Image (cartoon, rainbow, N blue to C red; front, side, top):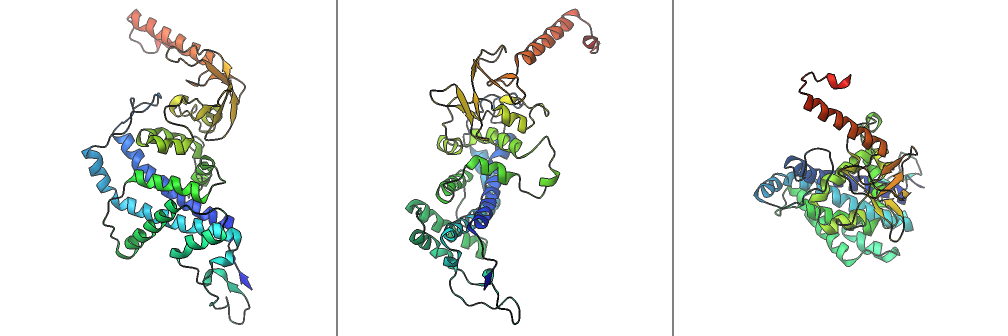
Length: 349
């Protein structure tokens, strides 16, 4: 009998691990640029909408130096696509992946054959077979993209040379199209959290930085680098639509313990015609309460009840009590400065 027959879920998991590894590496190229060249209006964690990315000569030089990294990412994308298509075929039958039945038994005198010892159908045939047996057909646009990437990946693999410049924005377009084509019944943000927490340091991850922290910081750093269409495919909403703080994600990301402003990465959007917001990251829905924030710099008119039962503004992320304490501390500091005293500890007593 044939043993170690792969399941569709196993292959899908492998494909998504490769997919999100490629995603993490290509977005790190954009994030590094965004952080290093300060494309946000403030270098602090004080929030505020980042300024949009504008390519210049420095960016083009940076991109040229990143070509080796991008070629490695390109091969990850191709491998993820190939295994993802195989997973879809495997949903019908894993044996459709076999090209022939020529294989040796796993051991002398054994009647068992290992599935991985059989030759599988060529990568060039995968899309054709997929569209023959699967109910959800791969679109002509994605099929052409898969073939182009496969051919270019072969050049990198066999010669280590690709005579074309790769752009991280184009790679993101490929990854976003791939997700909609190969994993149509899944939720991108949920998978981003799940596979973002699967790595060699998972068991030693500090409690104040986890996959949710990484996803929220990533969204903040990526926003100025993404096109409006890329941002909409990522969140389901255009970049100009008002966003609100999800207090569930802020707690999960440990922003309060690490002194990161809750407004750094708002991930919730208001549901049309309802007094509710839904987070694109955790998918939690919160009821909005019509209550104007008392913060001097916040114009938000809504609060929600956070996981601890406290009312918090969904614009700045603070309770009325926290805002009052901050105002009192500022008043005391102003009095201290006006008094002309120079001992910094006077204000503490």
